[in-house]
Length: 124
Image (tube, rainbow, N blue to C red):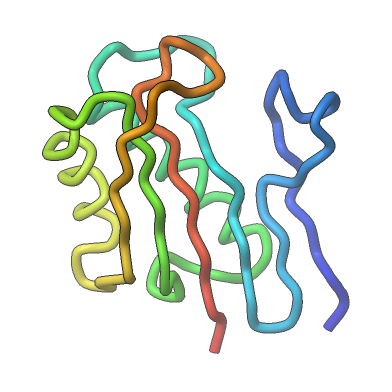
């Protein structure tokens, strides 16, 4: 199978030069995904849910699904947000149970972002 890419729709994409997701054979790698959109919700749960919706859509574009995800990484700017973002993560991956890390960072590219999420999938 040839390498397939999902373009990133982000203000930073053209400058940085990256794809939202790349599938190479059975492996799918989804870039760090922030809660981009027309408006930025203040609520960490809503930001996490938006990140995950973008990830699920990117997976679908390359023939993968949430149940194929084997690893996620969640970057938070405030440790207190882990439960709200974790609830959004659990709604998507609660039955999948991928290996997951929650990491607190000093900040993300946009100061309004509270969360950014990466995912890796292995398609059967």
